[in-house]
Image (cartoon, rainbow, N blue to C red; front, side):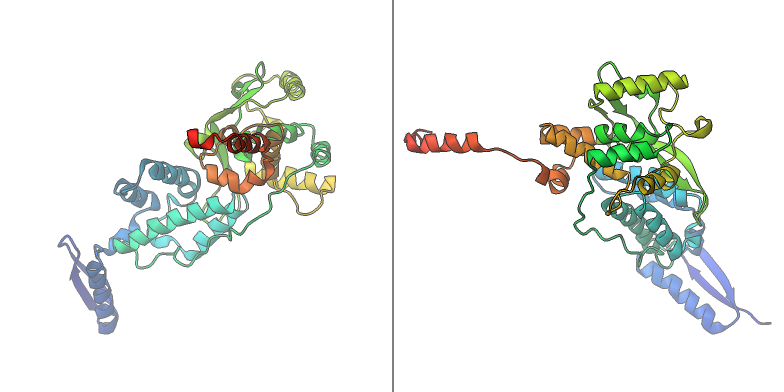
Length: 362
């Protein structure tokens, strides 16, 4: 059977050939490679054999971005992209893979965080198209979760009590601990006994645990430890109450835990894994405790902690630092309505200045 050969040179001048059954197919393929070159790509079809990790290394090295943006992208890569796609070839990525990954993150992370992850992947793959490594981006039409205004779910004292009572004794302390320290579920999962200073009531956050799917298709997951989401995420939170301190001391003594042991563990002392804990322990406790709609996620414990700090009179900057946030605007949008500022003194002082005719002397 006759074959037809397409011939072209890539941007570096290297000659390539490819065989097809018809002259039309050969000419079409050749024109596509030449069009890639005209768009600024390489025109080298072997680029799709690069793994996502290999392309990330090349791509990130050439990024002209601020140091904070680079740090955020590297954190997203290490925590979310590399575990799922790092070993996959660019040419083997499909839209369904990106969509499934986005949906899985939506169950674990805030919509804004999922959007940042997806935007990073879209930039990575769009530039791979421009480079001529792949013909189209499999992420191009994947949509981020909606980020409409969502009412944060805060838990009442009664709900916290019922949740704790509904959990197995091995997990019960997670509820009061998270509701006063505001740690994310991944941060709770990565805690070791040595991260506590029970003499001062402090916990230091150094890392976070993530549930990483095994293989592109999802399904089973494995636990990995990564740096905190941001530089601000590595922090010390001094809000462990005296009552909780005594309970933690009793738990540590009862289980014979050493400084290097995980603080919260399951059966056979296995470490806490975010995805499994959320689906098996938390969901079952919410049902058993009869918590009313809207059904809370574990993140509600974090929101509750922030609300407690604000009610206790903690100022905005301190709340942001304890919560591991650097964006004051975000804190104001999410929690600003909880602050009840009394400006009576300021108003009276202005009145006094105006009434005393002192404005002209300022």
